[in-house]
Length: 234
Image 1 (cartoon, rainbow, N blue to C red):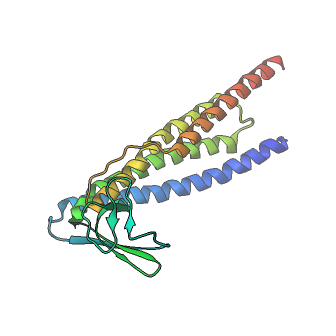
Image 2 (cartoon, rainbow, N blue to C red; image 1 turned 90 degrees about the horizontal axis):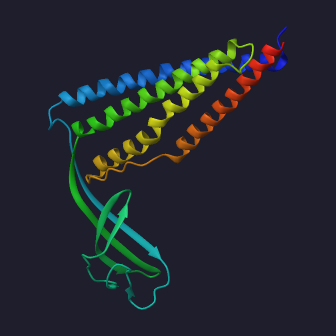
Image 3 (spheres, rainbow, N blue to C red; image 1 turned 180 degrees about the vertical axis):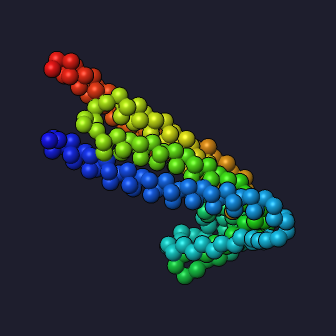
């Protein structure tokens, strides 16, 4: 008769394998959809769908005013009611130039405009293909997670070399995701805002998860060694 703890490990492994396999199917469908969309966008005529964007923003700040000027850290003061071409602000990754500031009863109203730009649907091709790469990376992670859960479902003891190696594969498969998530976001923002601002950053949450899984692999490796010593003693 199996140990009660091992029985629980088997049940958790069974549930985990089912969830991981479902996730693999969903992710695979998403990857295929992204690839098909990317191919369609590639062959579409450049002028089939064109979006012209004119950016305008109005920022109302309610605060007691001292005098009739606001002093900027980066330049001279801006006079309320005048038009300034030196001030600028950034909203949602888009830079707006200040075109006017009007004093109101409780503060002031700042009007700004961004450079107009044209967005063509085929410009989204890179975003769609990056999304496909993201899906492929996630599928690989889920593949190894499903394999790990299968090992737990069928094991007599979780402390085996195969479990250790699978844990390491899960951690390694997660590493590309730490870079792809920020890259995809910055590419999307650049295309949607009309200004190139590619940022290659690192998702620290994913990096911490990778380190945690490697630590678990080391713990399971130590447990495997103790298990082998125990078996040899018996």
